[in-house]
Length: 184
Image (tube, rainbow, N blue to C red; front, top):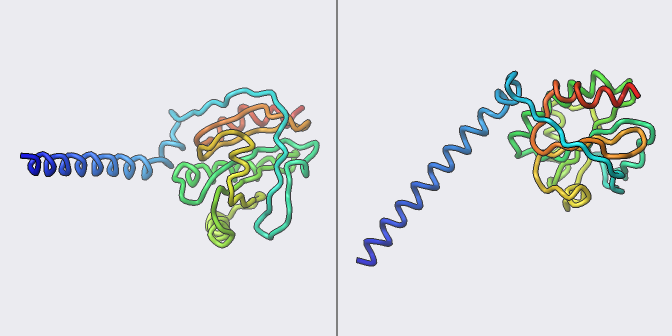
């Protein structure tokens, strides 16, 4: 009787696991189309606190810091190459960056926990032109006290965090919330 219960429990657990895996597969394969749909709008949370002191290295091994961008609007994006919503938002982030970098906008993409070679391959594949930093220990996640990926933070020209998002960001929302800060 106990053996029979064990077998039934094992089959139920396997079934739940397979259903969960199927849901994850469906959601991850549809993330990009959901992000680009007109129905998808992720509004930011408003904030008003000084940007954390954060110093990391870039893909060239140079030391970089948020303090390197005084007088500019900076979007900090915490992400990883394995994260489907992170991948989905990259074209949106790149389009916004390329449309506004001459206006004093900087996008700093901080990869969480991966090696330089893997991140460099991703940057090349996605043709990213904005600064990409490496964060092998999760210092940026700790600094912003948010361990979810992707997560983004908008710093105004004075280094004050004005907006934050958890989850992917789309171009429409960036235009609506970030562009007015550039016009200041």
